[in-house]
Length: 113
Length: 114
Image (cartoon, rainbow over all chains, first blue to last red; front, side, top):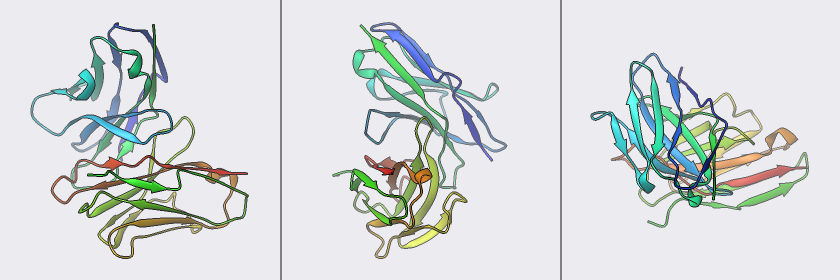
């Protein structure tokens, strides 16, 4: 069984500052990794995903994430955040060939002016 | 693509009542998924369909829950004899045959059981 840990429930940051949202996972088999964003009262939107290949993955809205197999991590980063990035961010994993996404508990990013 | 749509967006009901939610996936997506998200938590998998066949159900899906996808297009999720613990956001997602690694989510149905 897989599990995902997002240690930071909330991350406050000032506009134009860099941010890193942490994600660690546990799995006995290889997994695909995802970051989703959820704006208030909306569904989930895919930011980026790692399936294989380069460990640095670039996504939408200027976000990127780095897969680190030895540390079982997939941290999300953005060099300069905007007010509009305020949202809930979820890290998720899935076992290739299976259908169930397993999500972390989410990190609320709060960007203030 | 018009995206995944869900109806209703909000539902308030009294304990003991039955409710039904509908999900319309992206056209030609043959896989459809239901997740439940409670306050402060990430979504949890409930069930998934490939075409009209329901291939996996979570232990979270008690006997009071039933999901159908009769013609392999839209899906319904029914909760019978609702309980306050059923209050949550119910999310639907779909994926295409060619890209099963990417699930596209709808806006969700928020259920409040009084």
